[in-house]
Amino acid sequence: MARYQRLTLMEREELSRMLATGHSLRAVAQAIQRAPSTLSRELTRHRTSPVTYRAVPAHQRAQRWAHQPRKPRKLAVQPRLRTAVFTLLAQRWSPEQIARGLLQRYPDEPTMRISHEAIYTYLYVLPLGTFKRELVRYLRRRHRFRRPRKMRLSSRPIQDLISIDERPAEVVDRTVPGHWEGDLLVGHANASALGTLVGRTTRFTVLVPLKAKDAATVRQAFARELRTLPAQLRRSLTYDQGPEMREHRLFTKQTKMRVYFAHPHSPWERGTNENTAGLLRQFFPKGTRFHQLSRAEIKRVQVMLNDRPRKILDWHSPAHAFHQLLH
Image (tube, rainbow, N blue to C red; front, side, top):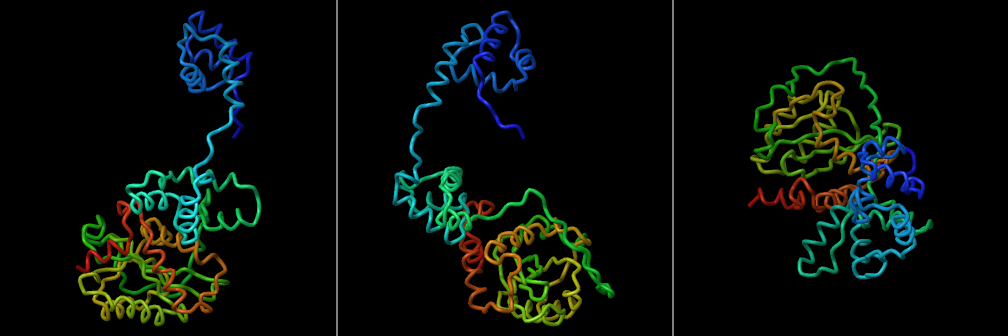
């Protein structure tokens, strides 16, 4: 993408001349190879009309505005706000979560308000150094392109699976709590994994430490975690067709939860879990050796993730939404 450049004096003179002779903004834009919106903003910025616009005064004002010192950034001049933002960044809150969270924590203090864009801007204009690297490391990584998942090859197909197409409406529209999505977050060299269970309604995440990835181990670990929940919050599980869920019938017998299987290579059918996996990579980057992490370390991340406000929950946390169901 070409870098934007300010209008030159020659372009402003052509704009003024063509407007004076009755040409439209679109015609001028085509003649000087500029976007019509650029020329429209030029007139608005200088508070002129096509009839009153003059090139030289407009260019002089633009030059003067370009050299005026900018208003200092809030995080640069408000140490208390800066401390609060950096503290929440260290807890892996996103800038948007921080902006909303501060509004709830300090409802009567205008000085403790900031937009998420202002947080991003401040972080990226910091000079290079250890401090900036430390702060930016807390941000969620966003990839422009999604890397295709490697296809799982299985010599034995899952027997008696129930298709995702058979899920009742209450699962699809998320009106009834107790329906979950599950998957494995795979570690270094595919040698270890972490189980993930995410509530479709509350977005509450349960992390399941695993000693191995075989079907029996996964079934036992998932069932053990889910059996700690009340029966009304154990209704169904949506999973992909990975070999670790071959014992789904025994899992259903143990938990009373029916397992619905997504179509092969269709991660969007379990979008809540896919999104959560992206959030978890902030804590467990690719190459993590999950078998070296203690249960306490894994559960600490579970608490941190569930305690963060979520836009989809009207800026309440998954923990808040989940505990509301228990009362």
